Image 1 (cartoon, one colour):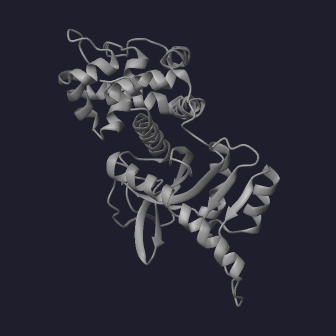
Image 2: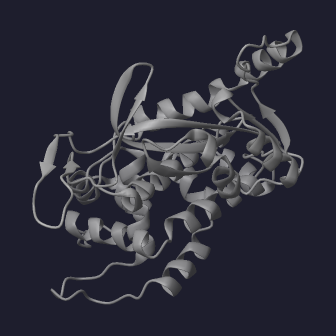
Image 3: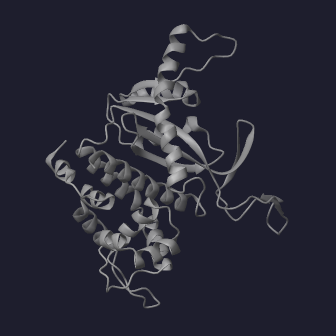
Length: 322
């Protein structure tokens, strides 16, 4: 562990104090200043420094608060004001201002860049290891309750509409139907940090999303990739070989054939490690509000995932240096 992390092991450091020291905020200030123009909106509302707004979003997803909830908390919680840099005599952003800023980050594709930068901070501090990674997928239900409607208007072909969440789709898992999305994600096997991921409609096959998760996770040659039988295909195994990654995909029994004892042992060993990614999904859903989508559409729900993942990783990192 390097000296910057060792300095954090002082007494009386709060959870938010530690997070405040883990991240290189100076770089993020430059990034946000370069990519976002500070200006008043058309209504003439006051603008706020982007880095303060980003910290508000991190608090929102660390504590699973609504836009209105985080706006009220910034106003009356001393620890939140200290973390974000708002002194007691400064006005704080309204919930609508927070919503607009989050959408601006999504529109400018900044959240993935911020997520990757913070992960690089954690990796340089020897908290994240990519020697062995685990890939899996989980269903995220839509923010809308599906209602079956048949559109009979002109220029349509009797199209079935389930809700105004047009990117959400139906899928079935273990005999139960779900309406929404699917999160495809990877974690390290050492501590369970989230390395990368993306969102698709719920009806997408896990098998077809492996390469995208690998690319989002910035894996290096020689890494061992573990995955369940849902990823078992000749195409995926060839992809791993071509990328110089070690194949840890579980074996699937072919029709009419029996799985060999060796492959059963391999499957058992892989299965014993995969619980880490399942726990990550559970924490995202239970602690960070990702049991269902908060917004509509793939882009905004990907933004929800990235902010949830940043909050997840920072909270986990703080437990290792506290």
